Image 1 (cartoon, rainbow, N blue to C red):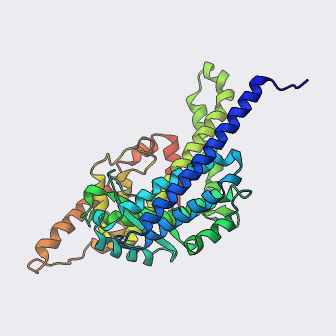
Image 2 (tube, helix red, strand yellow; image 1 turned 180 degrees about the vertical axis):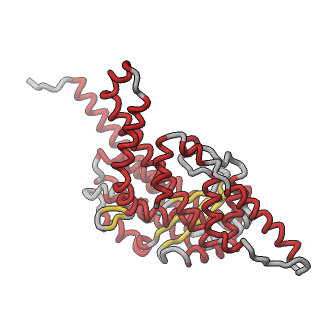
Image 3 (tube, rainbow, N blue to C red; image 1 turned 180 degrees about the horizontal axis):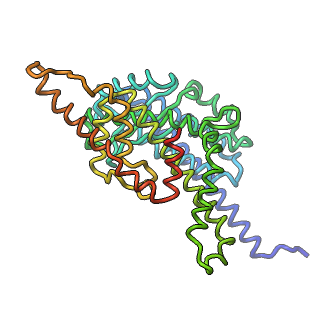
Length: 382
């Protein structure tokens, strides 16, 4: 007697039918994405070649996926859908960097400048976004390489690299800026900070002899942080009732607090390193830009209340220290000179920004919570 019930047979049949439908849908999705990427690739109104290269990456990857979709393991189909969906969403980066959307002459000069200060394989799509923020996405080639690296039984990385050819040697990033600031070259100094994220990411994530530079730093500090977190917990739970539960909750508290302290430390380093790179590339203009942008926010907000970002006052203080030699005690335009009326207000503004960062009003917020206190102990000691 067959042990499989009719209900189980029906369920299995439904599963196979839906799997076939999904496979067909993914093929259609891949073909449509390939055609769209090809259309964008053929457009001739990009300020640089980076968008064309990115469209080629999407087109060739979509074509390879479509050609092998029938052989894809059933369990990987949802994952393949995620890859196609992500690539489709990212095509908007190329579409939005066309000349009519961007100050194209500025884009050409900016990409040339950025390439001078980052590894030669780096290239940039620079495009406007509706959100009022500067951001960087990528590297896209490395992300796709990681995706195919997780599916060697279907499309080995070597096959994908052969399909995309020279594109595989590029590190493609997308830098976004607020559309409303399209023609504001002074605010676009913020691009230097976004490029700094490449340096920060390498420091945080690139492994040397099996470990990252950040891991080495964190491992040195971790034991002491753990002990201070444990002591903090014990000090806060001294009542007889708390004593009964202390052993149950202490280690859970230490683990959770240590994990958040790690995240705060990583984000703090990432943002401050990026600020330093921006200041190195663009000097006092980076401080002026940060002074204007930060005026929208509470300068002393705890990182725990603002996406783990360092306090704006600390960022102003650190950048002011980096560029101080360029603006203190230097009279670029003596009174009566041709450019005095133009430059002197800018220098006064820089000094006001320096003054805003010179106080330590952000430090009490950092000291008020053991997570931020320990995170910034590590950051300020390095």
